[in-house]
Length: 254
Image (cartoon, rainbow, N blue to C red):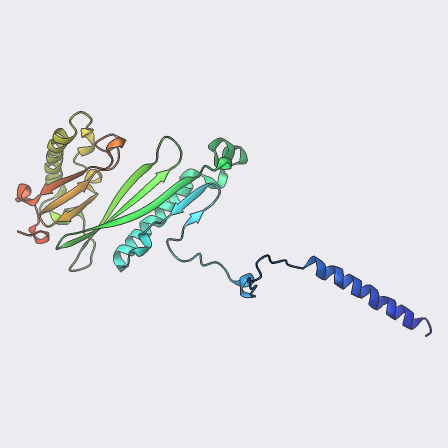
C-alpha cells in the first residue's frame, strides 16, 4: 500500500499530459474574433435542391442569370424542365467526369480556362400572347461561343402554352411555304450578299422561335441559320395583313 499512492499520482500526471496533448491537437484558431462557430455549421447540408443556383467547378460554370425572376407557374415549369435537360446535355457532351489531368492541361483548365453555360430571358407581350425568350450562351473553347434562342408562348386568357400552328387556320404544309417565301424576300432585301437561304426551308424547326405582336408574328433566326455569326440572330416580321387568308385572327387585333 505504501507504493500505491505514488503509482496513482504518477498515473494521474501521465493522464493529464496525454489529455493536454490531445486537446492541443484539436485547437481551432479563428483569425476573426467576431466569428461564432455554431454547432449547426457542422451538421447542416447545403441547399442544393433550390433551382437556378450558380454552379462552378475548376472546369465549368453554369450561370442562370435572371431566370429565377420568372414567377408564373406554367412558364417556370416549362423553362425549368428545358434548362435541366440543357445543363445535363452540356455536362455529358463535355465529358467532365472522364477528363484526365493531361486533358485538363491540354484544354487549359489548369490555367484558368472554363467552359461556360449561361441563361437569360426577356419577355414580349401582345394583347393576346405573352412570350418568354430564353437565351442560352455556350462557350467550350474556340474563337467564340454560341447563342441559342428558344421561345415559350402562352395564351394570356387561358394560361396554356401555344404553338405556331395555333396562329394559323391551315396546316403547316400550307403556311410554312408561305413563311419561307416571305423570308426569302426579307433576306434578299436585308442581307443579299451573305444570306444562307437554306435556313428558310419550310421545316418546323426553322420557324419554331417566334413571338407575337398585335398585328403580326416576329420570327427569330438562330446564329448561323440564315446569316454568318457576326450578324447575330436576325428578326423577321410577318404582318397579319399579308397573310390574312391563313392567319388565325383570334390572336390578333383587326
